[in-house]
Length: 355
Image: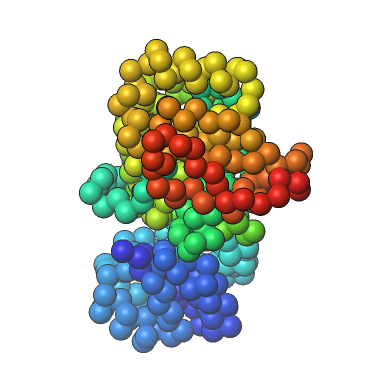
């Protein structure tokens, strides 16, 4: 259900510009109602419940705000705000609209009760993991994400690595995922709305993502319970939730494996990768529990273990030092492969490995 947002201002050029932006950039988040006069405002307030109302100071005097969950003052320098109650939060009128929208949604999220509803999940969860670092796991996860986006799916990429790779691939200037962790710890607010507030969409790939933690410890102290709440909320907002996991195999990793609809185990030709995969398969009974929903991704031209799993994707070696170039090239690979009969390896879409 979209958030009902009312904008009340006598400045029609401003409201047109703001509403056009919201309808273009946030059409899945907001239903926008514009009021240019006091009479029109009263009609709207009397006819429906409003989640968020952005009102100029002149609109507050006679407005009946009983039907508004969150009234906010839309103000600029020189406005007469004497008729506005002191407890009303102020939102600066003339600022970058994306910043304004983020702030408004964050304020709204913190004022709502957190409601966890796993049955409302609509996303498929795809988890990417390897028992060893440096095999290209993040690049493969983003290649998969970009491919899904090219096929018209909404994709949310969630990085649970100890040291986040988000900054390597995306603009990392937005609000940190630590903002979500703070709300989860305080148990005060609507986590789903806050995710919508701080998530960003990469302009080139169309992948939605959240910026890296503010510090290393934030990810370390994320509890299994809070991680699950976060995944549930993300799953209600997208078609495909892609989880990029740390290479350790702890309680959080095992819980993600349980919740995931599909697991991609990523390896490369290195000796350490081969040895650790053999150890994981032969000495960890966890593998037997996840085997049926696991796909082996043999990256960088690695020879896959055909007896490990029934589904294998072989990726070529892309000769480029730019990780963005690599994942975009690999996004053309078809990951949705049928189980290969008799353990015969299945390769991804063929194309040149020279980039």
